[in-house]
Length: 465
Image 1 (spheres, rainbow, N blue to C red):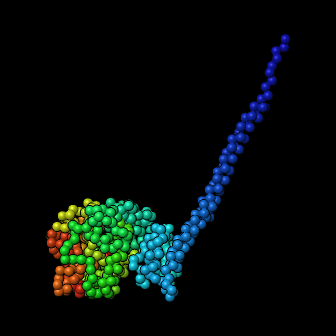
Image 2: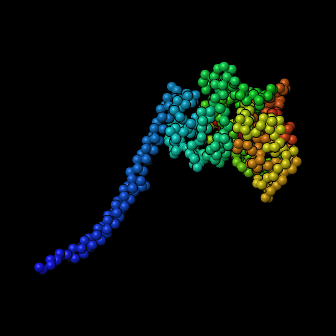
Image 3: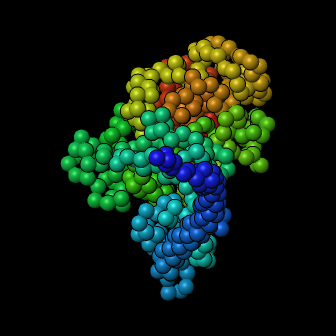
């Protein structure tokens, strides 16, 4: 029998082998096409003119319009029958806007243009009541929001940059003029604490007498008989009447109550102009920046006027009231920045005093009462002698991002001496002084002089609320 053989079509295998090669190429091409389509789709969604980008732009425009309309409604409701804005009513109406920031208090004709923050945007009100909206008002620093707790809610000035955002280390912002401000926490919980409130909390943010009393009880360690926050004459601080002074203080009390704190200059007020040796403030620009000459040879009234000029972001610039200085000391104590003894008895170990020895590696120093300054070359050893330094010269003389509260130059406040029956030495100043020992003028220290007093040893530090 003839053996049968199974026929194998070798051409078929060749065909199948070839077919597998074609399929892989097609798969690669398909993947490439899909990737291209995906890239096109992503670009369509997220590109400069993409769907998501346009949607986000539309959302931002809607938010801007909403922010502007909220302010416009309140402005329109603040006109009197004579067609002029009622500033007191405007302040009340603006504060009705949920979450609004930077409403000045009190509002006066000098407050305009007013810049507030609503829905995260800068909203500007000019002196004719016109309202416009700018960019996002949350700053340009590494972070865009400030930390807050139930006790304290630091406000962020429009156009400012966040320098330090840790409450435990001392929050610092830099305003649009380059000046730096440190947040002083005044816990909101003190108003409900029976240890300080005498059994009842303030009825509102305008219960000024109660708010001030609680603050005084809270900072009682640093109060002193013979001094109070009161008015005597225009020459004292520049306020034309006791009513004007009291309204200014009420604005401060309300702001501190609502925000749980206030800002003070990170440094003493300074100037980059040449040091001066007499009271001549014409043309001298004040700054709150590192490396400036202390702004001395200034009367208390002049210091207040200059401090008002440092206002920014719709807030109030001012010298500190006496209670605010006390609250600064209480804040430093609470945050364990310094002990009560270091604040109230002897500040030598953290201030620039005659009996303090320390090294400085930056800035400049003066050994002739501030008439001339010498730039520090690598290291300057300050020994036990009288020396002035430019602002922020050493970390040693700081705590919680507050520099030279102890030592260097005295600082004017809005407090008044009431112990002098002749009423000639009315104006109170606080802090230390480099030409005395640390126990003679600790950070707590109060002294007073007459309304025309000015010399090399006294400057000032603005506050912002």
